[in-house]
Image (cartoon, rainbow, N blue to C red):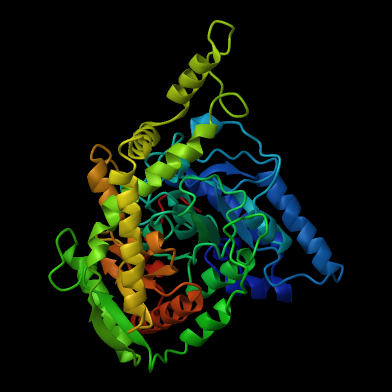
Length: 510
């Protein structure tokens, strides 16, 4: 045994898989190392809402026993994983970051949770999130605030901020996030991780607590491009229980990541989106973010890619369109939380009728941001306003999709900053919803079009991580992984280490 428990929390998944498969470490050791790290550091990070301590150790021990008995286990058996708290998991508390679901124990599991379990991974617990995934900073959680491991006074992104804090802070080797308007890519960018939003419909939504059904998509958050691809291959693929699931095989995602790491992008055409931080469209963007983006594009060009600028004028309308479509769908999805069938129930003492119980339950169960979006969505769908608001937003969505199609006729991938700024301080935007929504400016177009997009670290600005977003046509997720892996390998080689190696030590952590 040459690897210590402390080392095990910093090892990437591909290497953990090798160590477990060769017997150099046991699944129980790996799991215990991460549980110890959670105990030592999560009081400062606030990454987890629930930790499955005993069951995680039991599952890891079962993997070790099966492996020692000669069972034919997959390469990821024994690797720990964290799940965002809207991934329904049988018998495990699942709240979607909301008081209205406090104490709920689901009677079934989401498809992606089942697929991860079938692969032999060990669930560490459920990570914190903005309530019902509505937010860009994880400050809208009903339970706690998550913090960025790079600077504990700054946001870890949102709504998957608990997952990003856990992975960047070495409390999990990788995690599931979900992305409605950027909630995988944006937290990955501000914490120095890789985060991929798969093509809409290529990863099952069955068992994911819904925010906006035409936009929600689960995906991987990891420390390397290869690790993200490995997780994506496990959770992706057709699911007959999801009516929006695409019945098509996944491309070789891990192979694409491995080939990209060779650094040969000759013949690849890269389009820099003018409207997302390009020439003449820099208002609201940090100079350091734009500088790191330019440097990353130069790296791609140095690897043989042909770089051109692409204009997509309708992308400027993505923000208002999204904030009509998503709240409209949320107002419908959240109508099921009425205090009758499951979850919180307030006022059921015989002195209130059903309508009063529903009103009292929703008043106490939903937070301010959720109420804001329900009201906005209900208004946008109301008689007399539907076509003026929701209908017009859907037309903009069509325009954005058409501009993506036109762009991909000339280039293989489109690139932009993942987020206009680095992680902003906690509390800086909580009283300014419009400023908070602007954090999703770059990620929204791909979400509205249902296209795959990945965020990969592109350096530091002000000592904080910056991400480059790489977007590809529908079902060309492998293209995202190939280009991201090429950039990752080139930048790691240039600096002599991975970006996360520059992460400051968390005071007091083991």
